[in-house]
Length: 73
Length: 242
Image (cartoon, rainbow over the protein chains, first blue to last red):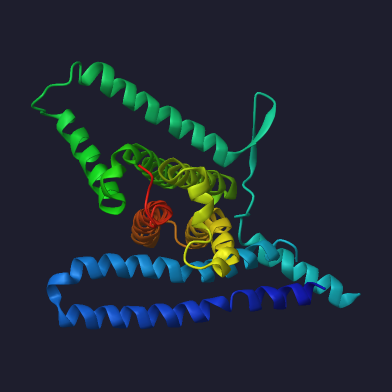
């Protein structure tokens, strides 16, 4: 039973993979946009930060579930 | 039998290296058992109230039309908050600037307490749920005030009628997502800093503390406030009654 909980904790943190890929793609697009028009870099910066915080949320959900499960080993 | 003993011993060893639990330790105050983070919240509130009273009563005895000194700094903060809320909400934002400023001051000042060794209240799920529920009530109150009671209910079926379950679920998840985003980021920072303090006592923790205790706190506060304001803006997206 402890082994199954431990495997579950490992699977729960897997949500970070999607978040990492998504955030990398978003940052690359933001860098391209700033290269095309450097005057708009303030607005692009703000929009990038908001988008990254949204994309990170699902990874955080998985992390919180893993922490909660680790207390029940 | 043997593997049971070995596995339980390993898990206890793994958990012993991390003294940070999801539920904070409880202290006893006048015979009641309360969480440590609740006690830290009260202490921070007391300090902020004392600072506000001292500034109002002793330093600025009378507000002047042409400000100088501390009144200048206060007006700078108020203008910054009003500009921030007006940029998201249009001209209706001035009355919500006070709420935004309060939430920002609360989250930032209770998170800076970690530099003194206490556990910051944002790592307690109760604190973040309370703030997220407050924001949820403010969002709905904004919608009810500007679109009326039935206008608010009609908002849920606005683009097409089949969007009703999608809108309901998105709206019901607002407090959950706001609270868990703040809690998860703060708790992750706390776990990493705690593991770091048990290895290095000086040097490296000071460098990483700038990232985890200043940058992360600022970004998460900004995200929380921007999301609250954009949900508020969304409720009056289809036209208002006043």
